[in-house]
Amino acid sequence: MSAEPVGTPGADTPDPLTVIRTRGYAVLLIMVAVLGVPISAAAFGFLALVHELQDLTYDDLPRALGFYGTPSWWPVPLLAISGLLTALAVRHLPGTGGHKPAEGFVKTGAPTAAELPGVALAALASLGLGAVLGPEAPLIALGGGLAVYAARLLKPGIEPSASALVAAAGSFAAVSALLGSPLLGAFLLMEASGVAGMTLGLVLVPGLLASGIGSLIFIGLGSWTGLGTYSLVLPHVPHTPQPTVAEFGWALALGVAAALVGTGVRRLSLSLQERVEQRRVLATVVMGLTVGVLALLYAESTGRNASEVLYSGQDALGGLLAEDATYALGTLLVLIVCKALAYSASLSAFRGGPIFPSMFLGAAGGLAMSHLPGLNATSGFAMGIGAMCVAMLRLPMTSVLLATLMLGSEGITVMPLVIVSVVVSYVLVLRLERPSAASTAPR
Image (cartoon, rainbow, N blue to C red; front, side, top):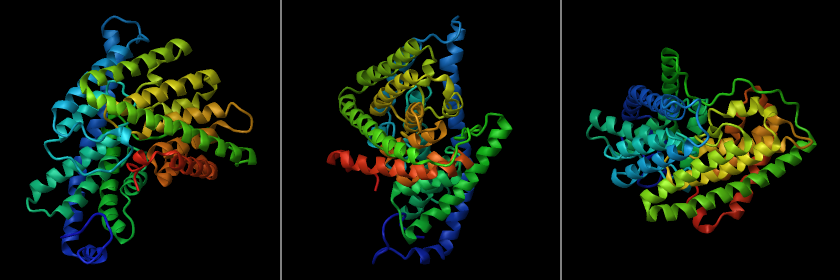
């Protein structure tokens, strides 16, 4: 078959409806269904390995060395080692470790087979040892690369257009359960790629098929192994009343605040990235030490666990909302400052995705503002997530869905507030964006 995954059908591009009716497209769907199973299993294994590395290096290793619990200074050497390993993978292995997270959520082509080990190792060294990044970008790259590699083994003469569709489906399968819903993962990839019109259906059908199969594999493996699905789920969400006029005012304020913070984080990370690339190994170690010191400062100044500053924040979102009453306003402000700076440093030098830290940062900001009159915690939590996500990702629809779907029925209640905060943040970010950085934003 010959189908272009992106673009508008023209004189040299077959009509997508015609392509969908061909036998080759049906064969492609079968191939996608078959490949979705091992790719989803590989994605599940990658997430399980990241989780085990985090537990091993942050909890088990200190106890094995005779410490009673994890010392507050522990992240400092841990992140230095993470920086060294990540830098070596980026510098010496093909593919430079994959996507540069400081440049935003940009859907690029699938890595080659030779580049896959470098992407995996750089991500493991970053995510497993405490960098403030998420697993979504490495999963998308690994899923697409593995799918193309397997498709070429099954069908050596596969055309580039069909190979691109297989790569997209592999990415769908890899992130199918990560965001709590296979539809949300699919929507993220479609909005980031900018595909529209009839071509959208051409890519979306195999992608949805792979995503559905991948979600089933995640559920099955999670149940069989007892490890869970590693998806974004908040089991206990406090009830929120219907939105008030005051909360719509807070939605405007949160949108403005998130745009300013997100723009600052992005500009700082891009500035640091330029310096990191000049002296990759030394500068990445320095960025790792910076993240570790920020975690230490947070722990010493608040008495809370340094791990709240580290990692993606995905697993901590539920606890942040459920235990909101235990966080003083001052603690939340210190957490926001330390997490934002650690996020910037991680974006500049490490390898991972930008989504989950932006969600955590926005959630903490929303909860901090809920200490003021007229805003309840659940509404502030949701609005902060949506506004900060769009500030970092430039994906407004995905940001609204990320902030609301995970809240269950409460998400429907707060959705109007989230939409307002996302729109305000998105428009202001585009006004604040420097032309050179804006050119890297997804369209």
